[in-house]
Length: 236
Image 1 (tube, one colour):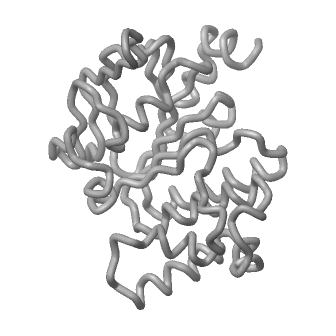
Image 2 (cartoon, rainbow, N blue to C red):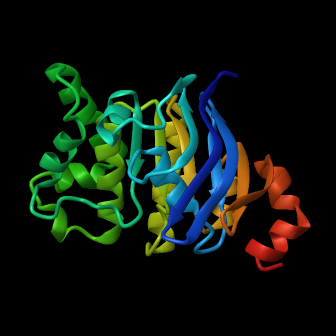
């Protein structure tokens, strides 16, 4: 398995607060990897640093290339896409326009049209609402739209930040079924999720993050069986 993303000695500070304190991890091509932990552990900060949205120390490598100081748009061009916490859809644009915005780094019009139809196939509800503005969608529909928009850039690595947040259980199940399908189609996924059981049930491997440090790393099923994980994150 080739390494697609490798993070070495990553540090992020807000003023005098060290939010991420020198972490190392990797994601292999074709993997789905979960990064779990409590609120304030540094998970979202880690994703933002990887995507070029926060200044940081340490190294971020994509396919062996050091992209630590690349601006966010260049990382999108290299196949990195983030679905942010809170979705961040364009409220005044239609569903179709939101999806087209995801393809802003591309010029292949015929392929963009094909990918648009593929997203509608993944999320039929978006097809039904393609002319509706993003701000009028439900929370679950906005999450579908945020994922679909990211897919329109044709990412090789998709970063998902808390995709289940604020959603009803049936919608969470639908979203994660689609994330599994996206993974099966060959997109590598790094998943940040507070729902540890859901994240590990979906992933191949996992990392546990506490107070800005990675404290455990193992196969997903091994982490699910770990007494420390069960006590801290599964309420057992």
